[in-house]
Amino acid sequence: MKKHDQDFMKQQNRLTVFEIIKHNQPISRASIAKQTGMSPTTVSRIVGELAERGYLLESEQVSVGLGRRSTLLEMVDASVLSVGVELDRHQMIVGIVDIQGNVVCSGKYPRSAEESPDATLKLIGEKINQLTLLHEIDGNRVIGIGVGLPGIVDNDAGVVVFSVQLGWKNVRLAERLKEITGYEVVVDNELKVKALAEHLKGATKGSSRTALLGFGNGVGSAFIFEGEIYRGKTNSAGEIGHTTVDPNGMMCDCGKAGCLQTYINISSLLSEANKIRPMRTIEELFEARRAGERWACYLIERALMYIAITVNNVVCMYNPDSVILSVELADKYPEVYEEIEELCMSRFVWEPLRESFSIFRSELQEQGVMIGSGLLSQIKLFELE
Ligand SMILES: [Zn+2]
Image 1 (spheres, helix red, strand yellow):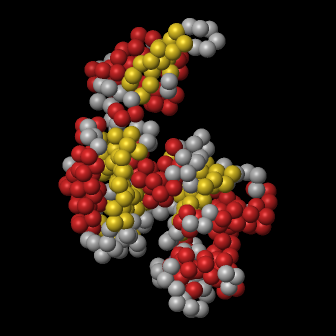
Image 2 (image 1 turned 90 degrees about the horizontal axis):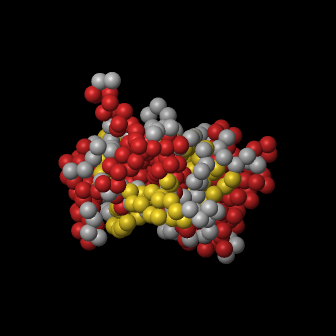
Image 3 (image 1 turned 180 degrees about the horizontal axis):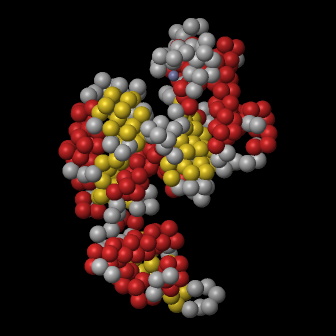
């Protein structure tokens, strides 16, 4: 075998052992050898190398049945860190996550909607510096930055192609943020990284087919199939908000009439409500519903119905084992979850498929995008040298 090939093999073996420990910890050397088919000597050598670099720690444990002592290996969670960023119209969340997706530290910062991309990216750089200083983060352990945002993102090129919420078009985000911070950067659509986070760490751990549906200022979805984000040709799979529901319906901000999101998203509900009486926030609409005003009941119940219809459509198209509902309004009005689930199971989900999946609520809530962005950057950027 050539030297080059030997190095490659060694590298692959190291990575295999690393991944096995990460996903099965605590684990013994013997189990690793058994799972990989590598010799005990090879496993011990690799474990020694990984421990020397600070990735692993050993602990002596007595197995319950036999009373025998064995040494088990665990990851040092903080041995690999990355920055996760959620970017939205009026605020951003910047955090540092470890190899298991635990949040080491994070902060939430206001952002003005008119801010230029460059100003925002500089602000992100400042916040990362502040966090690492304040929490005494070892910068050498930080392997990169992940950014999640609403809109169409070319994830390979790291370019924000188009984001209505941010008002950005063709922004070379990864390249520019790398210039500012020095770190490698990955960028993706917010729902895709949120689904990844829920799959790796939140509501649907262990699921092999997760669909996440997001309802808020926009409507969208994301799919994790066999651990991978389903992207489609231009990373736009899941943009269900712009599926046409009624060609004679209301105008959508995309310039088409009757898109699904015109029945559900917060701005559409508010503009409909304002035809009846002046109203600035969605809370006022919910108050009107609580007070029994029929038009308010109609608007909200119609939105919930379209959410249930969306669940059915997605379930019919993709046959997932898990559906995560991420409903922005539900933070304040948790009862909407129950109403949606009731509508799904009693009326809208096609009967043969009702038992085929479980409905979950987002577990990571408002930290989901930040955690998912951080974890995605680890998946893309982490390399064992
Ligand atoms: Zn539209």
